[in-house]
Length: 298
Image (cartoon, rainbow, N blue to C red; front, side, top):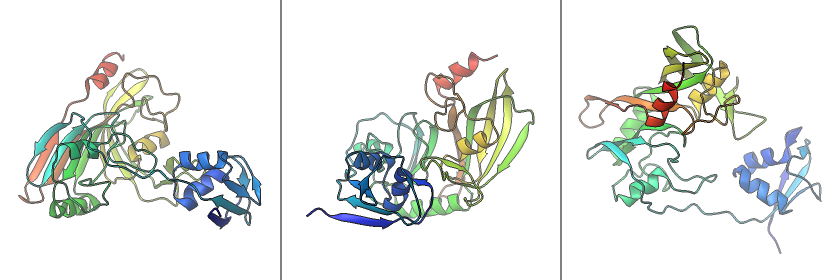
């Protein structure tokens, strides 16, 4: 006999796939798959992915297979700009995910590190060894990796207290007239599209500082300091002020095709070293594709 989960719907006028992503804690592609395979019933009937649920509806979900996350060492060239017994600072290339997740099980930065046989901290679960903070797949730039648990805990605490200073370059749509600005707006999950984040009153505090570096005819190059570190924070905040990052396919507005994804680069880190207790600073130039793109602007 097939196993089955029963779920009583507690929300009204919400899509079936969005609701199941939340209550089953699964990625959207898996939920879509099991609905299309007719393993999901609403009030005893098979329905489509976008079916609108009502409060009190009864969902039945037949047993389904979940892909197990795997960590496999991968031969991927990494630009390590600093390494000692406590940490590494890596200039991450674009199109590289930091660690495996339910929604992604391709090559990752973690697997590249495993291939180098570097000792990493074990504070996180087994899929995120050494990972203190993240960069999006299409964001290039500097990321800190912890090599032992003591360094990890110290750096994580410093991040939480906003003592790790993180700076980015971003090319955005439109011309920003003020030279400096602060975006102070809470960020949380988009209630309509669960795979996105948005500015929302029920979200978590998020603060982004920006400074204009150069204005072009239809674009602006910004320096950004990330004060908090919410998921997709810079991209969400810049979209919120109607100046989305160029090349951002999720939060952008009709983004132009770029040679290498979104124009967002983590160029500088400043923090207190967990062992020496001295301030360290690391900086890396813009990727060639970013530079080539802005050099074509007028």
